[in-house]
Image 1 (tube, rainbow, N blue to C red):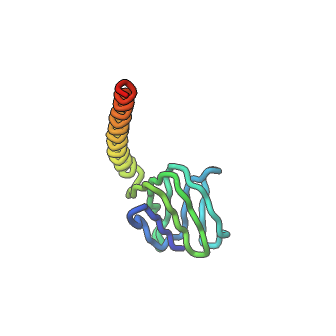
Image 2: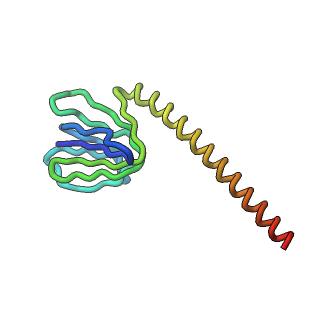
Image 3: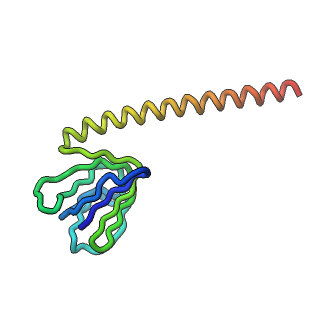
Length: 130
């Protein structure tokens, strides 16, 4: 099978694999090459896969997204995903990534609050003066 993980700006994974495991809306599931075609909504969690010719699992932390299996292709589309060599490394990387996103979200919320306060202030000024 061919596994591809698509992010908004790039392809994170494009590899030949023997097996894919992920967590969907209905729970955890596994995909093998002979399985039927299907679509699954993914929840934030760990997607794992075994590369063709290897026994070791590779791990990717994924945000919510969509997994589509058609024939010999498994395509995953998600907004955020992080590769990890092992689960310990993946955990460290996730903590760093979430810290970065948390800071960006705080900055965006602060900017939105300032814009909203400015709008309200201008609205009250216009209302008072005419």
